[in-house]
Amino acid sequence: MSPERWSRGPTNSDRAASAILALTEYRSGCIRSVDELEDALTDLLTDLLHAAKSQAIPPHALLDRARMHYDCEADQGDET
Image (cartoon, rainbow, N blue to C red; front, top):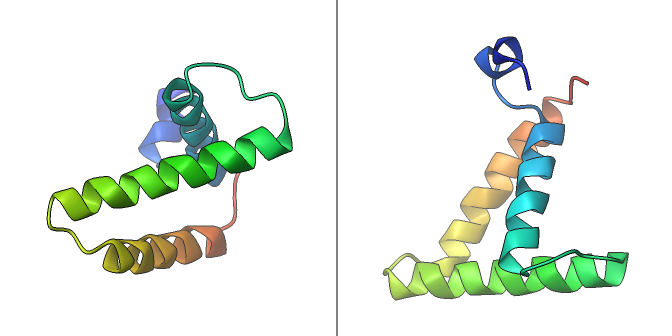
């Protein structure tokens, strides 16, 4: 990605690509199907909620906050 694009901030496509890279690392390999992707996303989200709770961060409050961020970013659309 060019520095000019980063100066405007990441796009939703950039965010999704970064998440897939993190998810692939979390799963230690390639995700080959939509079913595997859904399973990996569920497992990662669940483990992140466990991590939050272990640090005294209320998981449901974290989900609410993440949903607000997602809704705001989704409303912005995406530049490609």
